[in-house]
Length: 283
Image (cartoon, rainbow, N blue to C red; front, side, top):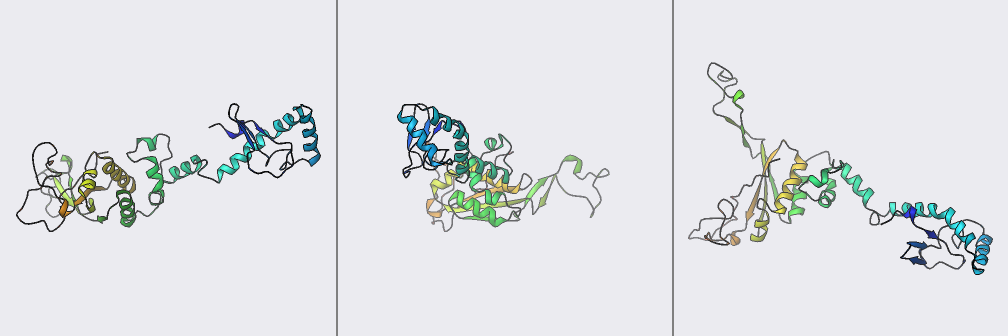
C-alpha cells in the first residue's frame, strides 16, 4: 500500500456529527475524506467560522479555500494515521517484526530467509529464543508446541568425539604418557557431547513427517540449532506407537531400511519403536 503521508486526504465542510473515520473514498485517485482530523470540519482545529466560510465557497462551486486547507493539513493527517497504526501491530506489523528479529539475533538482512525455519515460526518462539537462560525445559516446550506431540530432552546422552591425527597418541612421539595424556584409538567418549530429543509416541503419519528431508524435521532441527548453538550435538528420536509399527515388506510403499523397517515377531510389540536416532543436516 501507499505511504499514508502521500495520500490526498480531504476534509468535509459540514459540522454534523461524524459517523465514521472515513466518510468518502475515491478508489481511482486514492483520496480519503475524513471528518475527524484536519483544519476544518467537525474535528478541525481552526475556529468554526473557517468551516462555514469554506462551505459557502464550495456551494458557489469554488473549492480553492477547501483545497488550500487540505494542502496544509494533508501531511499532518498522514502522520496521524501512522501514529495510530504504530500501536496496532495488525495494521502495520513491520516494526514489531523488526523488534522480534532483533531480539532473537536475526535482524541482519537476509538472515531469516536463509534459515530452515520460517520467519513467522521464529517470531512466534521469540520468547524462548531471546531468553538468556537456555534450559532444557524451554527447548522442550518450544519443540512440543511445534511438533504437536510429547517431547522429552534426554541430557548427557554422550557421544564419540573424533580426534585429529595430531592429537592421537603415538609411541615415542606425542601424547604417549600413560595416565597423563595417552588415549587408545582415534575417538574419545564425552558424556556432554550430545543430547537426545525424544518425540512421541506418535502415529505413523507424524513419524513420516519427522524423517530427514521433511519440513517438520528441518524445522525442529533449525529451532534446536538456533537455541543451543553450533557447538552442541543432538539427535532426534521419534518413537512410533506400538500399534502403528508396520510390517516390513518390499516393493512400492514398503519399508525404508534404517528408518521405517522393523523385523516382525510372533508376539505383539509391548512398547513404542524407539530405535531411530536421526542426526540433523550438517551446517
